[in-house]
Length: 233
Image (tube, rainbow, N blue to C red; front, top):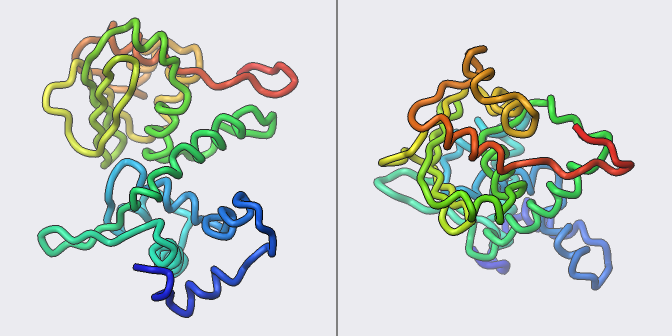
């Protein structure tokens, strides 16, 4: 949908202007409204139905989600795709570039002493945090492989290749290991804490199938940045 076809509700969003030629100010006019960037975040790993987006954002109402999707579509950030009669929402090629913005914000926000990693963590957030907080040099040294992570109803295929991590929604055809958790929060002690995978498995927080040693090496690739003031978590 082109800008000249903006709906009345989307025009209202576009009229919330700062009157500043700074491109960063304009970016905030596009995705600075409450929930807008998080709606885009839910689409960064591929198209999703309305119900899937809302499942990833339990705090948003159906009306607000509808409004944000309309606004993002009108501003060329989101588009509708239809397959087998099912409507899904997807980021446009330009909208997909918001992942770089989200990663930078994530690294910056994680350094805040007020950041609370114990709050509810979504499956999409978990997957995007992997691409944000990974040590690429260590990943490259660990070789190439395919893995799977299942978070509740959401399944993800992870492909590690030459130090880069590619993540898509759906089942992995031949994973070296599979990690299954009820919620994204359940994996955090072994991912960003110091708890060995074997302990999390023994506690029932994580179910592991396949190469456990490789799974542990994978989890060791990730760390949160040091908080300002030198505090570590």
